[in-house]
View (cartoon, rainbow, N blue to C red):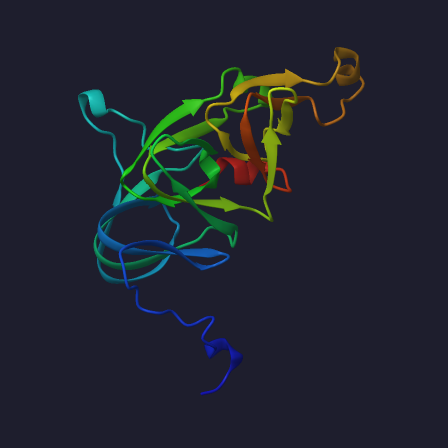
Length: 225
């Protein structure tokens, strides 16, 4: 059988080492040797001896919500084998988090990550005024994190002298050391007259960067996993 479909760029190769790699721009391959964590429902294929288990809450001091964002439960993948992850053909990016780093990622943009990473789930203060909670995960430690983005991301530097304002439906993530708050750019009179559609933004101040996507989440996509 002959076809461009079987070209080497599409053909899967056996993993040579455990861990996460990009299979292509739209999917991530993870060679599992023990355990890893992923967005529930994001596995598109696997081979080997793997078990997929819904990530529950811990006990006592380890109590932690098993949700990294709006409608985004996690699953643990355990065993020996290879698994592929994707979500609605979004672009995939792998971030190497090193000791001392801290990255905040919107829950809807988390695909999968190494178990060596620690994460803390937070809701942006005052996010109720955006029409829904804005849940984020702060990742620290050392390991790899796969992030998804609809379209090509835009990375904007943030400096002490120039804060950046981002639509809350378009934000993917930002340097965790940045100060964040919600900013209302629309006057009360404008709101009464129907509004501009850009009433509230996330304001970021300090030194770092913010990642945005070139689209706004629809209510359905923002709330479903």
